[in-house]
Amino acid sequence: AQRFNHQFSETFVVPDAYVGETGSRIMSLADPTRKMSKSDENERATLYILDEPGQIGKKIASAVTDSEPVIRASPEKPGVSNLLAIHSALSGQTIDQLEEHFAGKGYGVLKEELTEVITESLRPVREKYQELIQDKTYLRSVLAQGAEAAQKRAYKVLSKVYRKIGLPDRSKG
Image 1: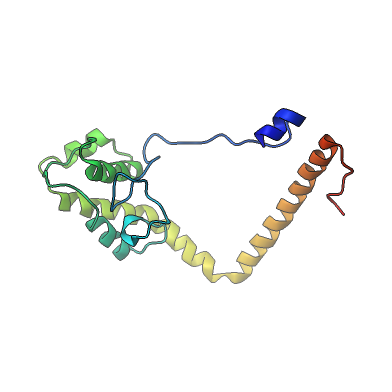
Image 2 (image 1 turned 90 degrees about the vertical axis):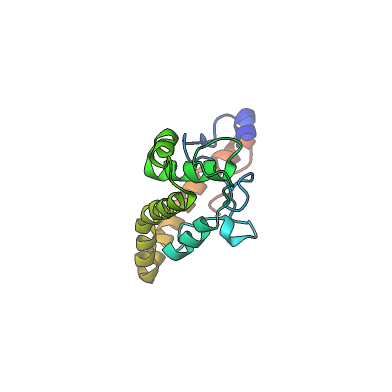
């Protein structure tokens, strides 16, 4: 898109990336030196939006920490730092606030509270998903409306592209 726009003038919209301050890079629960990935072979390494509370609890309980019984974020503690980053992203508390909150407490307390924060954050999404997935008629209508809107927009852009590169407009036929 950028190359086409540079050569033929503004045609395509190039979106700006949005990266939030917290939670922009969540690491694997099994190997906190790697990014969390849906393609990870270890199912306990990744949290999914539709995970049930029990699944979330098992994944967080098995998340990698370390042997030092102090809850603080630091490069030497990637597992704990990752859990604090997830908590911060979902709860809105700063890492400093969380470190203070968990001072003198063990990893079990952190993991239990984090499980609750994740579960409650994802609950509305899971509930809405369950509601929508049951209504097949509604889903078909949304898909049809989306396809129609996308097709209209694509025709407009394709017409522009054809004009700009000097081809006859064949987008509608």
